Amino acid sequence: MEQTDYILDRRSIRKFTSQKIHTELITKVLTAAMYAPSAVNTQPWHFVVIDRKPIFRQIMEVHPYAQMLQTASHAIVVCGNETLQHGDGYWVVDCRAATQNLLLAAHALGLGTCWEHPFYSS
Ligand SMILES: Cc1cc2nc3c(=O)[nH]c(=O)nc-3n(C[C@H](O)[C@H](O)[C@H](O)COP(=O)(O)O)c2cc1C
Image 1 (cartoon, rainbow, N blue to C red):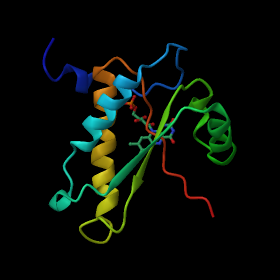
Image 2 (cartoon, protein in one colour):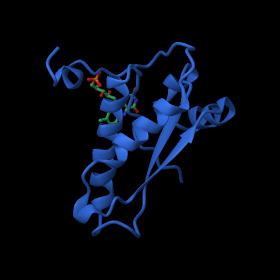
Image 3 (cartoon, helix red, strand yellow):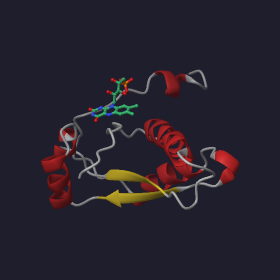
């Protein structure tokens, strides 16, 4: 296997098995996310790990593209911190880099993921 194959064969997964995911794997995925580059190394991100079905249901009620949560065991919400960012709008780019790291690390560890579009409720 080429070293870059895990980048090329990552795909969005929208139906998940009921296999339990060990906390250690979640920690590895989050660590990879936090190793992403960020402007002036500000790391303006926070990660909220959700593993409660009632919260998934609440998200699905308001988010039109989040139905993959029906079978998901975990969701990781990537939050930008405007007070830490290097300048206006940088948190968006930095959080995207972290998210991509997260997806690739999860795939390398055998976990399926799907990037969910940000949803801004009024
Ligand atoms: C910014 C962004 C937002 C996305 N939002 C959603 C989403 O809300 N729901 C969804 O099912 N997929 C979402 N995706 C996944 C894309 O549909 C998917 O990455 C694309 O179709 C390419 O397929 P692949 O990931 O299997 O290569 C999103 C991807 C990105 C980068």
